[in-house]
Image 1 (cartoon, rainbow, N blue to C red):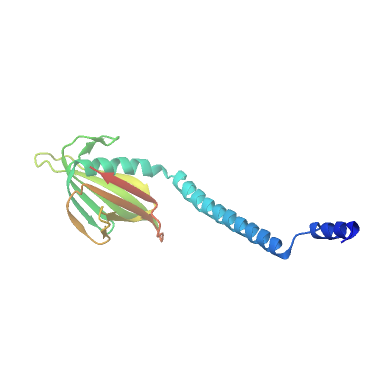
Image 2: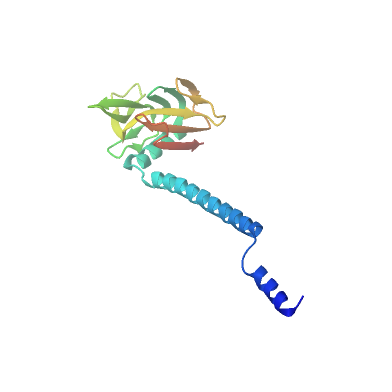
Length: 188
């Protein structure tokens, strides 16, 4: 081969990519795009979850504190649809509902007023010698139902009656929602 033919042959091969090289580059770029889209989708889901958690209702903190205090001082627990009854040393007094640790029954139940649901907390002293009137407090608005879940994943949609469990989860639901508006984790 003369020098001119060699030069033409070499420049001819260096001008572009082969079909195989193009296919490999296309495949790699497709994989990269798919993985970036998957990452963006996961980030969007996590962002929505964080926004939902950050968008906390004003009643959530109060409800969490009260239920945890009541469960910690309770001895017996009855959970029925839209009704939780805790019996133990969980009495409270005053406008701040500070704990007195006296024998009492606390009931959490859902009440409807003008098509709006409210979660109420009733506190009734069990002291036979006292005519102290119990107290009632609105602790949440918009809560339609709740569910007790024990550590072994047993869920009590209907009824649970027994001692206060060593650990449980209480999920509070708004109207027509499959996702809980609030989930309370408790362990003694």
